[in-house]
Length: 133
Image (cartoon, rainbow, N blue to C red; front, side, top):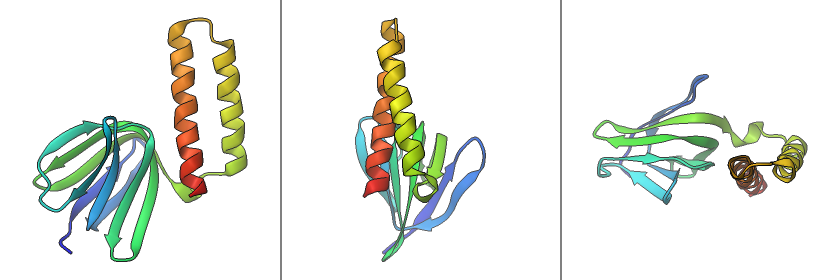
């Protein structure tokens, strides 16, 4: 299968750079798959898992929280607000973060605070599903 260049960058570091066959991206409007010669597009990311098909049988998964995906002639670049390999997440720590976020939602006084807390809970639950799979 034909390959293209892919980079995933977070504020802390370059998490991935290399030739890949396909990448599944969690866009704000839904998941989309990028392959070689994909039409140019820029998309906002939602919290979710980026699935990287490096070669037949070799895959990598990273969790991203927000950012942008840019598909251009040179390949795909993801600029993530936060990104981390799935294997670096701890299930017990994640469960505690969900509990804390639920408490924040219950304590929220304004609609804006409630919306932010609900979004955080959704993102954490998405991560919980991803690391359970």
